[in-house]
Length: 168
Image (cartoon, rainbow, N blue to C red; front, side, top):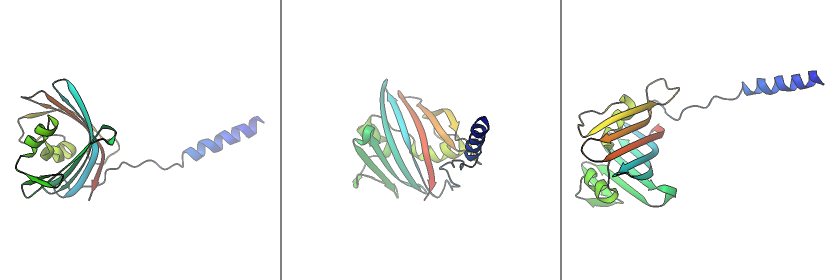
C-alpha cells in the first residue's frame, strides 16, 4: 500500500513539473510606435480616492484612452490626434489636463507613460514626481508594473497598475 501511495505521489509531483510556465502579457514593443496598455489607476485628490480601469492605445503621439469607473459604471473615451482632442467623439477646445481636471477633478501625465513604463522615469515634466516603481517580474527588458506619481503643486497622487502591455 505504501509503495502504491509513494508511486502516486511521485506521479503527481512529476506532472506538476510539466505544467507550462505562465508567460507575461508584455511583448517586445517599440515605445515610439503603436502599442497599448491596460490597467487600473487610483487617484487621491484632497484625501478623496477614486478608482478606474483604463485602456490606452498609442500610435506615435496620438492616443485613445478609455476610462471606466468602478464596477464598469460610467465610461469616458478620450481621443487625441493631430493636436485635436475628442471626448466621446465630440471635439473639445480644452487641453487634456483641463478636461480631466474639469470632469474628474484630477489628471495624470498620459504623454509620460511611455517613459514611466519603459524607462522608469519622467522626462521634462517638473509638475510630477515619480515616487516609486515596481518592475514586472520575468521580463528580459525592464517594464514597469506599478508606478506611483505625486503632483508637486496640487494635492494629487496617482497609482498606476499596468496589467497588460501589448503591441498593436
